[in-house]
Image (cartoon, rainbow, N blue to C red; front, top):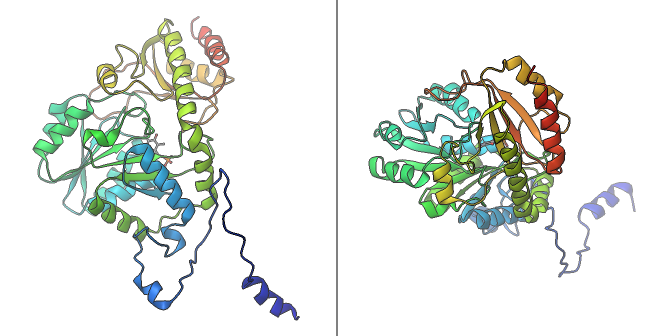
Length: 392
Ligand SMILES: *Cc1c(COP(=O)(O)O)cnc(C)c1O
């Protein structure tokens, strides 16, 4: 057989593996092209209908499986995957907001979300306004007829204030029935509370965090229950051409079964570290939803028993920020870097000035700790050694 005939043979090979293979692992189905059995079949399929396959961008059995598992985790009906948590946020904004509309963001929103509103949406004629997530009256004052989307985050980024979600949702439904209610549920990970039981419309996740669990994958998801809302989001997602890599999907599928165990372990370790920090004079306040006195603790306690492994130390304002930076630089187990939910503990200092638009009660430098899977004793010893040097 000639070499070029060999190519044809190899491409159109007749062998088909036997049916019935079963193992704990989901197959990694990669595709740009997907085959149709006939022209009629090709013409009949709809891009956003998941009863069949159309093109790799719109899913393969691998993505459909992850979407179904995430829907179960979140208590949703539909899930859409995006290449990052941030792109999941931007798809929602782009699908639901048109020129003349407004979006409301909590003042403690994940910062790139506010940045997107300021630098991209503003140019498209979409305005944004901030509300104080701990004050339903502050939210109500912003709920004019132009508001088509309200974002919630529980707790907020860095300062970890936990809002009264049922009260905020009731306020929005009453004063702005036209608005879609969206929650960035990355912190809750589908485990801390049941978001859809609260009556909101959609959630997004940075799967980059706990669901991936490795600090090595970027991915996001959008979840909802309503069919019409799903179609709207799915069409925008499709038009933007946001695909995900199947090997990355496989990584998340592989990590999902251990998500509840990792979340619980990181939660327990983080609470021990929070308790250690509460006893340190260098720390003015420990920000963690499960710590009594932390902003919104009572709202967290009504809704949740679990918490993610994030804690922020509000340092004594008398300690100069350069010294706090040196404390973080000197840590051995805690590495310096963004993100969270992986095996490695991380520390990032934040200067309070400029972090928020609305007046807020924080004074000293904030050090956000993301607790990984190291032995808690080793993490406390690391912090203990570093914090000793802050005095003197
Ligand atoms: C990390 C994060 C995101 C963005 O996720 P990426 O995958 O890094 O784009 C969005 N929201 C919250 C609350 C996050 O922590």
